[in-house]
Length: 291
Figure 1 (cartoon, helix red, strand yellow):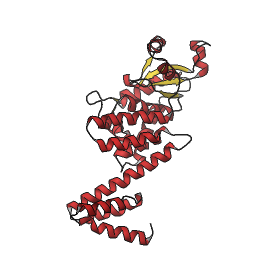
Figure 2 (cartoon, helix red, strand yellow):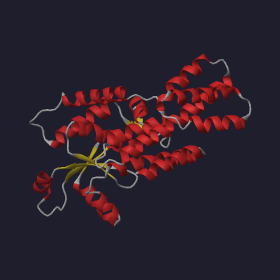
Figure 3 (cartoon, one colour):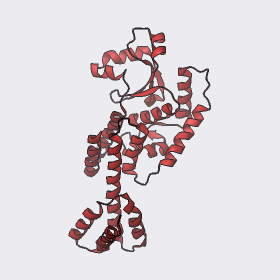
Figure 4 (cartoon, rainbow, N blue to C red):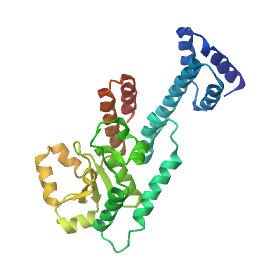
């Protein structure tokens, strides 16, 4: 920011104690156009102010700048040719928790990964490795569905899931997928109705176990909503025959990361709509349209 621009912005900040809401409306609109670098300066002013109204107005300006910055980062993420599920999951959490730092999230994920990896052996089968993952993820770390307030918004946010160990079917499946991927397991999120699954993809083993005519690469399915239960062939056949054609196709195709994040945002939109928080709903629709 140039000195002239900074001087103009600081001049407008001096108007924050003006009781006229029209004046504040102009100040809010203009200062909110600035980038995230202004937030530190605004926080310093907040700390030195003794005026409660000024502090609340600064908080509102900071929030608007942070939301704009998060939206820009999500747009940049969505415009990439190859998307990263972790980045998208983290950015959605930054929407609600703008002060959220990346390093603590990475550290917690690395700890989970390490605890699982230490139990792995080269001689173990795919099923044995998933069994170990399930034991550490669901038994040791106790990740589970929130059956008390299943539609609570916090069940969608990366950091809150890691803190409370509670989530909803979509968020728990995303986290499970991220952990499994970090261990180089060939798994993919399967977008199936309201209960997403995780597919273990291995073309050669799938043909060996299920026959040459299987027509897809899925060796077996995992249900993170049921503590990582392995779904057998009979159950999969039942699901395939009772589902519509579109859902049958979803069962054998990895869900693109952008669609996974869209499902999470749809869950948030439902949660905030239930609570009558229309401003949050409008913002989330804007984010969904980017994906």
